[in-house]
Length: 366
Image (cartoon, rainbow, N blue to C red; front, side, top):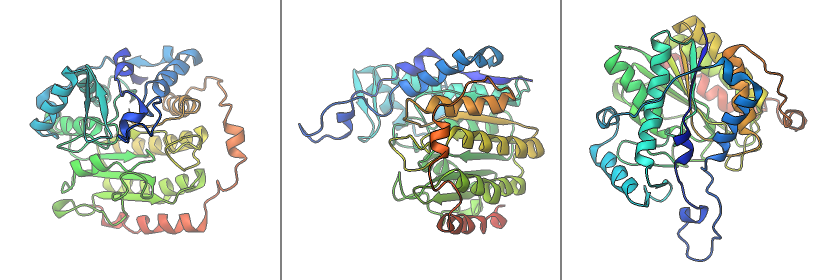
């Protein structure tokens, strides 16, 4: 079976405006290209084509998520506000999530594209899938957008799988450098959805993603945060997966795993301070595939989130896709060797200590 691929030109038409719009400080911030602009994802898509791998993927056509589907997570007021703002020339959800004309429809396509990828895997049409969608989703909460995200793409897809397809236990593994606060909030109190986020400690949102946030009520233990110290490299990420993520998934035994996939932990990213490499993402993908094979028949779905380095995101994404398909294209990441030479990739004692705190929580997973 092949790997499913969701992509659409409209994802690159979501308009976030200019950088200065994020900081309403008058004439003190020179306008520039917004960090969440189309280029990183467009270049990712283009490298997949140039590498020849695009011809080996199974295209999955995205569809618009309906307002009722969005409303499984989001309030009707939030949906209506984004829809109204999108009908004008420009909208903005609480200052950090600017959007332009037509962004409501594009955001619905991003959520629906993630649903389509999930259904392709669930129905056995593909072995696994990657949805290259935009805008991202893992920061959006029920009643507002946040951190460049309008609707919770993965959260909406998980709720759809449970409501429509009768899926029971689902796990999400978020490796974006920023905490997946929206996905965590969507399932707080749910014992049948395990949410895992591995992220830079106190980066964004600065007051969430603490290791002490383990879920509430019936969902106590079903949320797992792994806040890594700034400067963590491949060694820390692999250790976090081997000591926390993989044991957690084996204990929980989900029927499907969804990955909010941001590449802003890359060592070249301007919005993070981590040192991940494309080969590092290759290793993490392999670890996820192995545990997915053992616990849920290999059902693994990726939905794209952040990543703001035009030069490096495409190679990180290609490494993930090559691993999912089991096919190497021969494309060499020109940044891999220089990044490998950086000091500090090995697991450091203070990083191991942070991982050990999270590892102690695995036995509490319901």
